[in-house]
Image 1 (spheres, rainbow, N blue to C red):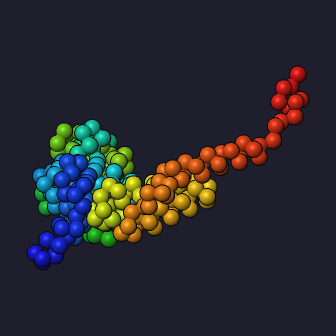
Image 2 (cartoon, helix red, strand yellow):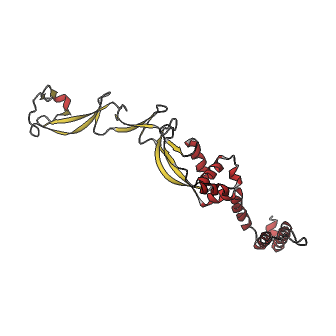
Image 3 (tube, rainbow, N blue to C red):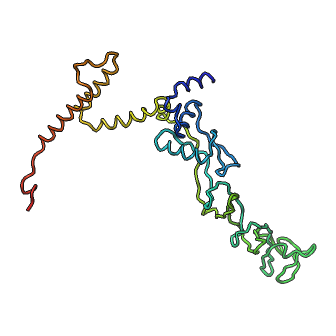
Length: 280
């Protein structure tokens, strides 16, 4: 493992080895370690996430997303978090709340249904010592299934007495105290990041690797007769012997061809008819 680490460090280009750019440092670290930039849970962080590098999660995410936009990293989904709309913290306390007043002071209560008078209410309203007395008609309920039944459980708010069968869900931010309803809270996805093939090439060959792609695109726009001298020049440069002094330099040859190409372009251009060139 140590040998592999040393080998990959030796292959790391000097552009990244001595770079002060944070994004390039991340690329170099991932290449040398041969491991992804892995996300993990961290309750001490406002983002609830930490990466296996000595940087804050928000800084890592910012730099990694920029590298993804350049094709140097690729994402792997880790988790989705709800975000506080006030301070953008991920540390939200999830709780059941009263639909009416948003209090979390709730109590589950069994409801009774009295058949004779059709009254329904919490069991505590029927309970009198060891007996069940209907609060509406004052009749005692003695036989379950004959006098009454239990249709279900209601959630009763202990602050405003509002009763519902299903409470709502809300979030409270533990950092700023802000509140947001669950259906209104925005979400943010967090990822683990991997080096792409282009990222590995950048790590081994430095900034010239990215420049080569732009260089190729630039020459692709030139006419074929200008690209051929460039290719022949590259073939000569790959040989051990340099250019012969009597040969044109590459820049001179490209300049001559460019001038000839422009002259041919002007010669082939036909003048516009007089009535088109100089309308009345």
